[in-house]
Every structure is written in structure tokens, then in C-alpha cells.
Length: 295
Ligand SMILES: Cc1ncc(C[n+]2csc(CCOP(=O)(O)OP(=O)(O)O)c2C)c(N)n1
Ligand code: SF4
Image 1 (spheres, rainbow, N blue to C red):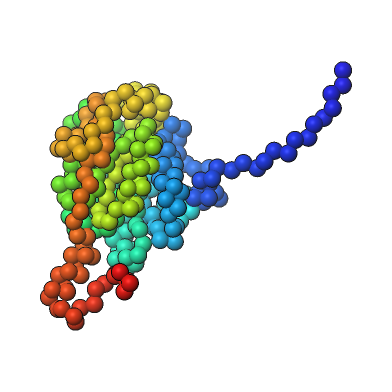
Image 2: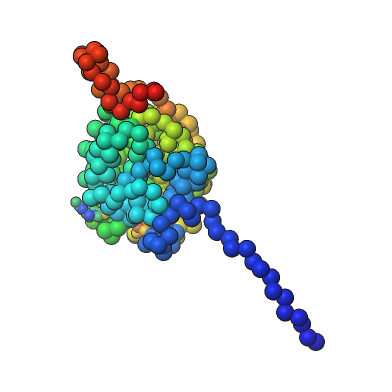
């Protein structure tokens, strides 16, 4: 029996979100099952759905596995020194107030060495969106204890279990004055995409915590299985409580996870407050900074 060869022209398919990535940097460094890439997917999906003007966006990171986001995104971005993403972003925003400046970094970077910058930027209501990928550990440097490691979890520098109380990040952001505070996991991709869209549209200090598996270090050391096992945990133990009191959303080792939009309020940004203050002080002699004349 003979068979005639059939030539079928297959269309060249490309993921429509690929344009948001610097494809010459791919393959990425993230381990199988790591959640950072999923968080990034939700972020670029938000940009795409909003048709966000990429000329008006800058993404800043510190150092760490999460910090690599700044290098992979095909937008103006800067991979700053460890812990210093927020002061860099603050300078950028104040130098060019028309930009939407997003800080995208890890829990170690933002809340250990960078903790002071976080609390002051939130207190001042600096117009920044801060995304923290919280994997409960220092991923890039080998799984040391972080200010977010749950009590009892084992880390390379806490081999008998962590005894330092971790930060409750939404409560920290809320109590310092953030105007938008949300937490989702990388299981909640739709809700996370919506939170990114809300955050990108909001004026003032926005904080979005993204819980994300680190199968190579945190999960392995705590015998939690692979990335899929962590997603099952997120699915089974997450409880959506929009508007929850942030004092009550602290995390425990493999316990329930409260997710949702906890805070959404208005208050003057640092720039608005400065302009208002100097206008009152100097009257017409003061020219408002960062305000376009048509505004
Ligand atoms: C000033 C300084 N201190 C320490 C380091 C080493 N260092 C690099 S990444 C990192 C921790 C990263 O942890 P995290 O921010 O949680 O990001 P992850 O890798 O988990 O995404 C540390 C301590 C550094 N690069 N610079
Ligand atoms: S070490 Fe952990 S955080 Fe870093 S890429 Fe691997 S899984 Fe992700």
C-alpha cells in the first residue's frame, strides 16, 4: 500500500505575551516548579489587558531570583543593588513623575536589608507599586532564613526550625500607610492579574504580596514536595477575605492563608503633599512640580 505525502503549512504560532520578554535572555534561570515565572506571567498579562503604554513604565528590582524579573522584561528596567530597589525607584519617580514605577523583588531584598526603605516609602505614600514575591526564604543565596520565614520552618541557617517571629507583610504595609494592599498566591492567577491591574491604576503606595513556591530550597528542606504540591496547598488552604483586618492575616507554617484585597483607600501622595504645602507657604510664587499644565 502506498501513501501520498501531504504537505501542510503550519502557521507560526507565538505566545502573544512573548513581546513583553527580552527573548535573547531566555532560557531563564528559574528552577522547575518555581512560582516567580507564574507571577511574571500574571504581571505581563495585566499590562497586555490594559494595553499599558510601555513608554510610561519602569520596573525596578533588587538582587535575588525574583530580581531577575527586571532583566527578562522588555521594558525600561533596572536591576539595582540588593535591598535598594525602593530608593532607586523613588528617585526615578520623582525625577520623572509621568512614569509608573513598579518595584518587583523578593521578600529578603524588600524586608531584610531593604526594610527601612519600605516603611518610609509607605509612610510617605510614594507613588510606587511594590510587588513582593514571598517564597519565605533567600532563594538565590541558598535558603537562609528570611524575615518572612514562618515559625518552625527549617532553613539552612535555622537547621532546628525558625524561632524568629516573621513579619505579617500586609499588616506592615497597612500600618505604614499603603493605600492598596493585597495578597494572592501563584495559584490565583486571575485574581493576581486583576490585582496588578488595580495596582497599576492606583495612585500612591501599592503593595502586592505574591506567595510563591521555592521547591529547590524552602520546600525541599521542609519536605513539602515539588511545586505542584505547594500549589495544592495554596488551593486547599487559601481563604478569600477581601477587606480583612490586616492584623489577622499573619501566616503560619503550612497553615491557612488569607488572600484578597485588604486595603484600598485614598490619601495624598508625597508629591501632592509637597505641592500643597509649598503652595500654601509661597502662594503663586511656587510652581507645582510634576503637574502638567493641562492637569
Ligand atoms: C548588599 C548585599 N548583601 C547580600 C547579598 C547577597 N544576596 C543576593 S540575593 C540575596 C537574597 C535574596 O533573597 P530574596 O530577596 O528573598 O529573593 P529570592 O532569591 O528568594 O527571590 C542575598 C542575601 C548581595 N547581593 N548584596
Ligand atoms: S532557588 Fe527557589 S526561588 Fe530561586 S529560582 Fe529556584 S525555586 Fe525559584
